[in-house]
Image (cartoon, rainbow, N blue to C red; front, side, top):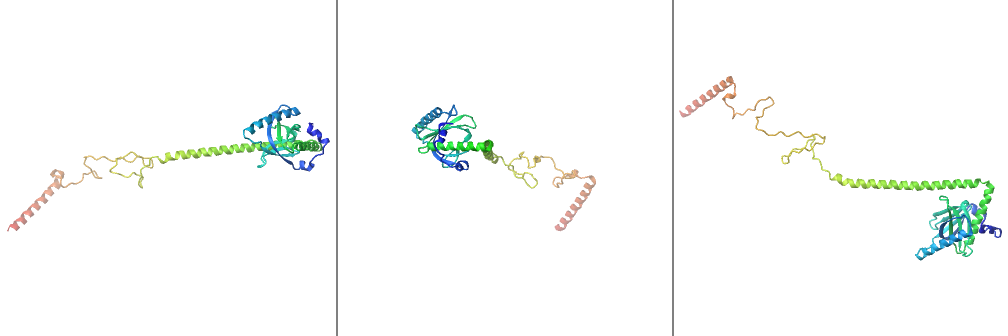
Amino acid sequence: MNRAFSRKKDKTWMHTPEALSKHYIPYNAKFLGSTEVEQPKGTEVVRDAVRKLKFARHIKKSEGQKTPKVELQISIYGVKILEPKTKEVQHNCQLHRISFCADDKTDKRIFTFICKDSESNKHLCYVFDSEKCAEEITLTIGQAFDLAYRKFLESGGKDVETRKQIAGLQKRIQELETENTELRNKVQDLENQLRITQISTSPAASMAPKLPSTDIFDMVPFSPITPQSSTPTRNGTQPPPVPSRSTEIKRDLFGAEPFDPFNCGAGDFPPDIQSKLDEMQELATGKDVTQSSKLNL
């Protein structure tokens, strides 16, 4: 055990077991940050980490950055580091992964603990600044260790395994939620690209040439002004060609030439018909002569 935990023989614990086992003890502090260390424990190890983070914080302070405030929730399950206003969990350090905890004897405001990261398996030293509660926070973490160890002995180690399984499930749930968020964002991006594509192609469709209107027989109406074009009808067929005008004599449905009384001659009729026509013409001529003689008398 480290120095902070070995002092429990001289001092009584500050909190009831129920407060740490069924609930948690909250503290407010300033978070200087975390840094990787080579060893899981040791006073010199945390001293070097504190010196390193203090120097980095001094540089950020000279640039106008303030030291962020955090809320610590200490229980027999670990130490949670939260954002005070939103209560968002920034770090969840499980108790069985914390290997060392101590307060700085040269600076009463500083306290630290070393925790093994669950993903990288690296040892990280977390450094905090609390003006009045540095030693109390260190003792509270020590009391949480003592209660967790007693519970481990009472349950025969089953409780620790259960907590590990729960922690693994919680980690898996968080990974699935992250994947779900990424997939949702990808789907949204694809929908936006599809919408942009549809908008970009719509003006080109509106500029397409319009087909001429047709009648009820799906035919293009005749216009004497515009020449006949080869525009297809709606059913895809070409309109019938317009016959060209010619000087040939047109015939009727029976193949006969149309009758023109001004152009007919003597040789246009058969002989029998022509003879009767001549007789009729002579009778008509005789009648005209008789009538004219009577008028003269």
